[in-house]
Amino acid sequence: MNIGLFGYGKMGKIIEQVAIDRGHYIVAKIDVDTKEIDFSEMDVAIDFSTPDAAFGNISKSLEKGIPVISGTTGWLDRYDEAVKICEKRQGAFIYASNFSLGVNVFFELNAHLAKMMGNLKEYAVSMEEIHHDQKLDAPSGTAITLAEGIMANTDYGKWTSGKAEKDEIPISSKRTGSVPGTHIIDYSSSVDSIEIKHTAHNREGFALGAVIAAEWIVGKTGVFDMKDVLGL
Ligand SMILES: NC(=O)C1=CN([C@@H]2O[C@H](COP(=O)(O)OP(=O)(O)OC[C@H]3O[C@@H](n4cnc5c(N)ncnc54)[C@H](O)[C@@H]3O)[C@@H](O)[C@H]2O)C=CC1
Ligand SMILES: O=C(O)C1=N[C@H](C(=O)O)C[C@H](O)C1
Image (cartoon, rainbow, N blue to C red; front, side, top):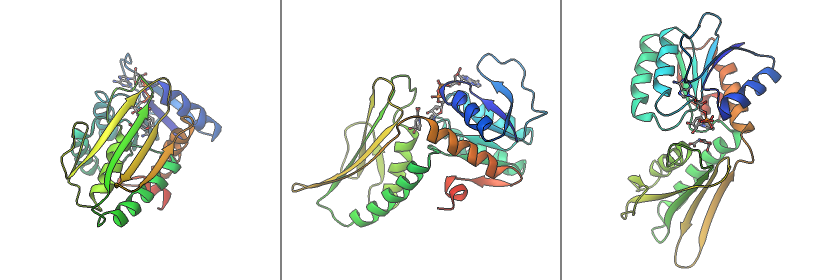
């Protein structure tokens, strides 16, 4: 498979290594200073760029008929537009806030726990996410997906990074050192607490998931997510 990498930073470089190890070819590396993009050899585009750049990379690729995998976070105000372009061009597109197998299992665990905790009004939920100090967006895309999973299964209606009202899920974001990504969900009452936690030890799980998604999407039409890829 011939892959075009959009964003050749921390993730782009690891994805290159994982893709080559799985027998694929990197036919383009597009970064902030790329003047012209050659789509002619690409079977699939993988975008791990920046919140400002992601929509442009995704829409250009879809317009050229190239299936797109995007892991960039912090651009989702334009997600519906990207879906429309994909549908209009009969293309193929996956966005996931987190491509790792472990976090996708954690998403399921989070939804299941929220279903059980939804009626237990003595417990209040809160979330903490910890990442490296170069991260541009907060809260993390993964934290937002986790909050959406809680909202879908409880009476919580919103999440907030500030002081939470009764029906809001407070998310606290910490930026320190080179932490690849840690997410903690806590349900606390006056008598006890229940906590679930996912810790990424490095970025390889994200990269492997993105390459597996790219292998899966080639030849398909539609807008998908990691549940489709992993059959969860
Ligand atoms: N969904 C997931 O599983 C994961 C998502 N991420 C997300 O992926 C994104 C990238 O993360 P990192 O590689 O750690 O960041 P990074 O800062 O190391 O790399 C981003 C790269 O994008 C480049 N870039 C800027 N403008 C561009 C443009 N117009 N076109 C192409 N490239 C451009 C930057 O120059 C930089 O090299 C972030 O949004 C991060 O939150 C990161 C890890 C896992
Ligand atoms: O920027 C990162 O590094 C990460 N970003 C994603 C997010 O915002 O959730 C996924 C992972 O946590 C690493």
